[in-house]
Length: 372
Image 1 (cartoon, rainbow, N blue to C red):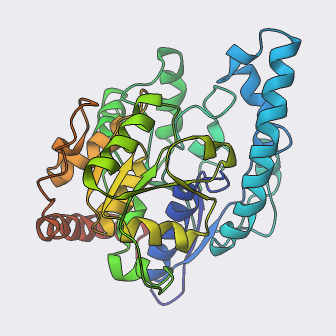
Image 2 (cartoon, rainbow, N blue to C red; image 1 turned 180 degrees about the vertical axis):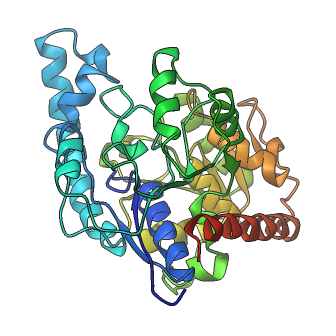
């Protein structure tokens, strides 16, 4: 490319979550490797801002706490400090992602001041899933752009295996405005196909960087203790109990990493909200990694750490899809009495070769979408 193209991409970068930040950083890095100027559109819905998100959750995903004045007071009193603490940390961590000079909080603001770019891209993560208010946000379908703008999607995700019937017509109309669409999960490709949209499956952007590239941001320090690491995003007491027993049977310490300080009540030595590099360091150096997180799984694969997946009750297709791709669906825990699941080691020589092949394909598709 003689003149660098600017790609403005939109993703869920502002969530106080390691996967959100790291996939945005990986998208940025991948685009730069292809010779582009990459900038993340700093879109952060008003109802998802730190000062508003607890109230938003109370009306939607945490509605069981909205029964009466007392439950609402308890929910707000316990949750607001958690979000405030995590947001303060992640504001620093998000600095590895280059964003637009302006922060946008609504579709209208974006329509009135569209960031200048040659190409507009919906990035990865659960951009096409419902947001905190319980509805799909058209902004992540680039609804604010005029028809003539070049629109592409890289590794976008619906989150689950289906979308609500009431949303299908809108989703179809939005997707028809794209020049090209690529999706992260095989289930997402199927959803698009059922809506009459041709989509290709590609790797999550975190896989576009190899182990050596991720190690550049990992602290170079020795590991003096062998441990089992838990990264648990979803409430699950059985998972908590299982992790404690798993570590005991392996004769190892149990470490737990989380961006939520109230998780200290769960089993294991608690590591609260470490830096981005330290988060990856703990995964890389673990003897075993137990997680219910897609990006936790992705980094255990990328950093070659033996792992076990405990599927969450919802949106588990993300994890199943990548395990199917590498041929290790047997790492999904089916019984909380199974402590032998990790006895047979994952052959990372085979896994790395497979990911390398898929990485080359995904890069080729991304390059083709961007054009010369």
